[in-house]
Amino acid sequence: MEKVKHGLAAGEPGRPENPDWTIDQNWDSYTAVDHGVWRTLYERQSRLLPGRVCAEFQRGMAELPIGPDEIPDFRRLSEALGRRTGWSVVAVPGLVPDEVFFDHLANRRFPAGHFIRRPEELDYLEEPDVFHDVFGHVPLLTDPVFADFLQAYGLGGLRAQSMGVLPNLARVYWYTVEFGLVREGGDLRIFGAGIASSGGETLFSLEDPSPNRIAFDLERVMRTRYRIDDYQETYFVIEGLDDLLALAEIDFAPIYERVRGAAEYEPGDILPTDRVLTRGTGAYHAARRKVA
Image 1 (cartoon, rainbow, N blue to C red):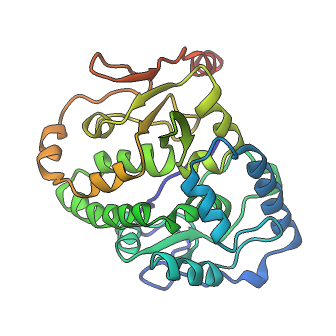
Image 2 (image 1 turned 45 degrees about the vertical axis):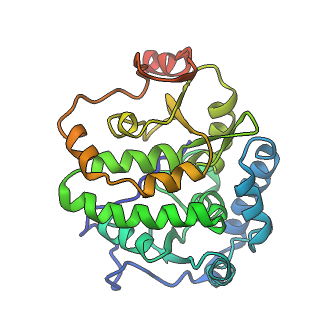
């Protein structure tokens, strides 16, 4: 499981000199151990994802210079992405301030952590690393629909921040870009990077009886809290990636007014208005709460 965020308060230690927080990936500094961690994670997910991840992700992996032997070079990734959707990958030291994150997305730049987790952290890390960001996120940036949605999200994030409703919009990102499921040929498939880059959550999200799987509803998602330290209690399901682009065309202002100050839902709640695809047992999180 991975604790995944996309913002960090400005002024944190380690802030780079560049105002956009970008740094040189310094690819030559990666050690054999670093590349070995990448290889271990890559091979694990490559075994798990076929038949579980969406077709757009698989196509993106096939089109990009992302392989098992070494951590990808962001320059080569950017060249390949630029030819397809006009996106690039820029290196950052880790989590960045929200306004920096949104500005990068709005300008079709994906900020990726340049570091990789240690061998003892294969299944958990405090913030997204190069495996999460590149393996999990970058393949879908080859898809024009997803690429346009993510740019629109960046633009929307800057607006939401100015309106004081950023937490509501952040939940949309969380339950789609990070932990989203999509219908494909009548079956559920993974498209969220937080799932696609996690061996445990790949299996948990699709096959475990514990979590709820509920049809995506924008206002419902905006009012739903999420887990940052464990597997999700609820996964929201879109009908296709085109649904994301439809979200980008909505005027969020009236929705923000409706959700502002409205009651919020806990991660495992099921509402009478939900279209429930799978009502979870909740057994996994109930056991975790007993231990805690």
